[in-house]
Length: 119
Image (cartoon, rainbow, N blue to C red; front, side, top):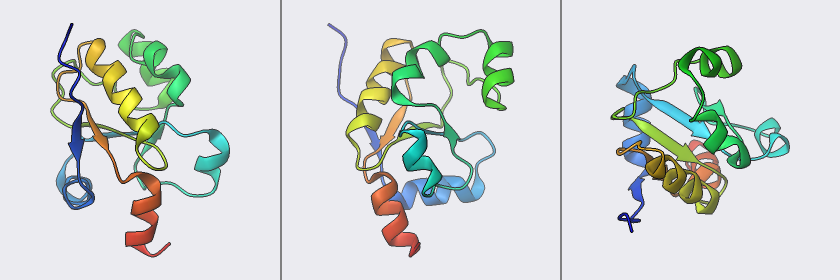
């Protein structure tokens, strides 16, 4: 059994990454209805039930579908988030199973983000 401890990232760390990193891929795994109400700038919407398929795609397919470059398995800055952390954790665990060793979950989710950002 692989180590199932989910790596996490805080609001402060995510905010800093969004400000400086060109390599960050922030994946929003919420439903389309939730995303339509507001999202973290720069995030890519890949619903939870499609995460496994998305991250199993060939890079060309991934780029065509999501408009961003598919991260390599050792991508240092791959972050998943949902509304309050649970689905983000599930997506992060799935990414780990697929070999994305550094995938992290933003546990505060969009709820915390929107509160801190005052939106």
